[in-house]
Length: 266
Ligand code: IPD
Image 1 (cartoon, rainbow, N blue to C red):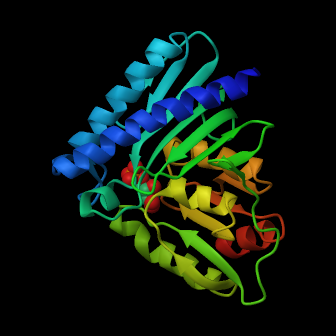
Image 2 (cartoon, rainbow, N blue to C red):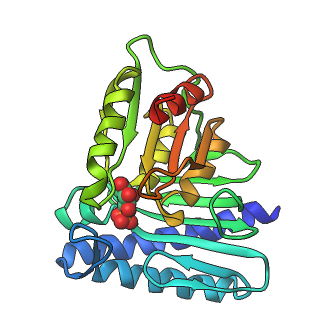
């Protein structure tokens, strides 16, 4: 089996076990462990526990690979492959009981820096719906057994777009101005609350496009591969704003350049 597909199988198996743990812990109640970059940016005990599970399983299955996780940071490896992991993407949804959160696991080669790595495999699992989006480089993006394809062109009514807002209140005015510009292309906008699912939805044609500033590698590593393997285009290192936040824009080929230009206001 090609390496990318071997890594995809590992990501899928571990995402399923991790998703089951996240769902079970949510059923047992919620414990906020800490706040991070801002008061609104929370981490639950479950985020930490699920990341430990994923890290342990990866160390058992792929002991020579490096690791980069949202909650526990980085550990070097010797194989040239890094696993980039968000144990619970959409933690605020998870905390509020909104069933839109995901386990996101990606394997990349090269420096684990957005724009520099070469993504090999990824899995994004919503533990509540049970939907598992997965991809291996060169072998397509899939939702369970169905091959995914982005929408090549939005419908005449305009594009259905996803976005997200950072936790830092100082960035909200700029983000809202960006949304105002984008409305010229949009039939409507969704704020789902989990970037990995936004990107999976672009891959699945459930959204025509997606844009957000300030994402971290673990928010988009698996989702970006889903988009490109489904025939879409994505930038993950777009022009930084005055807060130093880079831009992620993803869409089908008929929309991507227009969406990027409108988001940037060029
Ligand atoms: C967050 C979600 C959210 C996005 C934020 C991310 P987290 O991830 O993906 O949709 O708007 O920028 O930080 O903190 O829930 O893992």
